[in-house]
Image 1 (cartoon, rainbow, N blue to C red):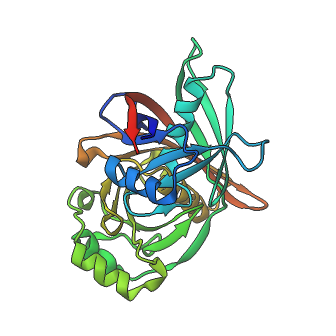
Image 2: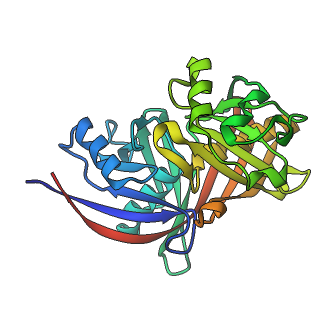
Length: 297
């Protein structure tokens, strides 16, 4: 019987049992795809990561990310949390480069005055791509009506910087009322096959007219087993890039708050910048360790 060490951390928080929990298996060598998926389902977190040797020795590691039902090409809080775990064991680490399905992810480590790791910031691996608008009829998926949606700045829109989400802006008072309707999700997923069974909706409200004032957000993905996510780094990074594309500016930075309605408040620092190659985004935050143990296979 094999023993696989793992660590769990809460990501995008400085308080245990806040933020988004993550399980990190620090040595995934010899673990099959089927076993990785089974372990991710057993951990029952929104994502679980497995650290492997990199294909290119110039990089730090190959990182595989699994949600409860499938492998992810990229995700935010798994990268921040995995980097936190690895850098905590090596005081010399300041930057990590992870090989992932969506591309190479660079992670910058944040340390306090004593040298202890407090968190990390990642750059999304791809520039912003918008993948098409969807009608306000998507509102029932959120238990809302079309009147709850704000469409003056954009219609519900799919976008990605490594993994795609559907972004829906709502009036502030509707955010707390949002509740996923699985039947509506199933109908919408059937109507829009491009979603490939992964209709993940990131619903948000601005804290002011200027996006730099920050946003409040929630993310629902019941078709992948995540009823609600406490902190979705990849979606927050993509939204930052999307908001910058709407303003026409060169750069944007703000704080996003997510997970409040779940009792797991999360704070994410989001930034986006316009370059000659497109709009790129970064997201970062703090982490705290929670559990350590071994899984038996």
